[in-house]
Length: 360
Image (tube, rainbow, N blue to C red; front, side, top):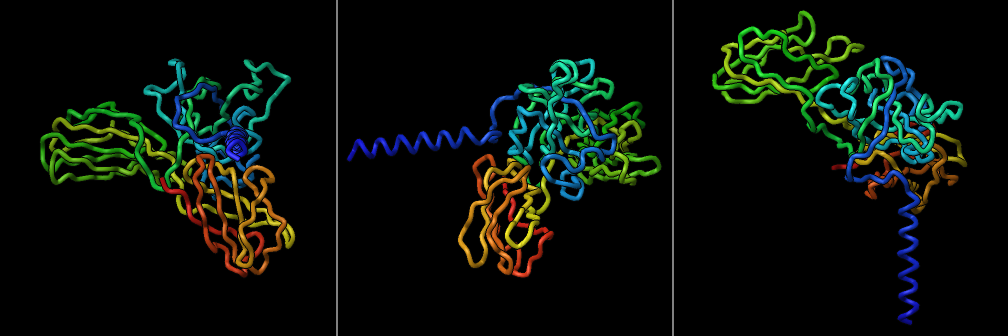
């Protein structure tokens, strides 16, 4: 009996190990890995819409331009859809931006191999190369346009459902009344002004021509935050400390940090199909970002596992019309979130419902 128990335990452990190994792209806080990055989609990233993950309009789905198409080695036949990565340009001082700023992207598309070209000369996404084809605005945050392709370091991360400041992307010390030169940062960083020894210091930043914003510190030293915004939705937010001035001037310090990409609101479930076929697109997932398991429950049924159809579209053949729907999703970091009764009994195909997101 003891031998049988040991054998059963060994079999169970072997099965669990096998299951773990078969779920690729699992979130890890391990060391940085090496890859290369290119860009596509145009300056407005319009060419990145749609894609192999099924997300459709990346703007309305909450992904924006913080996206990447993954090579075969990273895409995992679609299981990596939604996965979140931190990426830095690495070891190419000619083309990498100084300071090696980080970008944070979600996997939303597949970069197919091109076997007509060698892997080191145009076939960048050929197996077994790990490669990121970034939305053009993201590539330009880490490297020069003329580079075309750059070496990068990357790692998996978890995306929070609230903004966090994670890294300094630029800084300048302000020592005079009128600042000459200064620092120009684009792309919507969060900038802070730390006053020196004077009270009531005022920092004025011209974040767009003819738009001055004054920030007053009542006590010094102190810290204030400037959310840099552009008056034109199509233009990148910019702060230019070359147009900043202080009164009274003293030893003051301005630094800017890049806020991590975040998810706003709950996990979204878009229900498509027909009476005998439910196809659910899962989007806006915080945490690891990618989903490895989905279950669905009607108000008159138990929990039923769904199978992945393609990208992050999950299917069930159960008849659930007329029942309220609950969903349970598991991310690649093995955490599970359950959204109870998010779709009312009178739901219709084509509707999207918001559930409970992961918290980190």
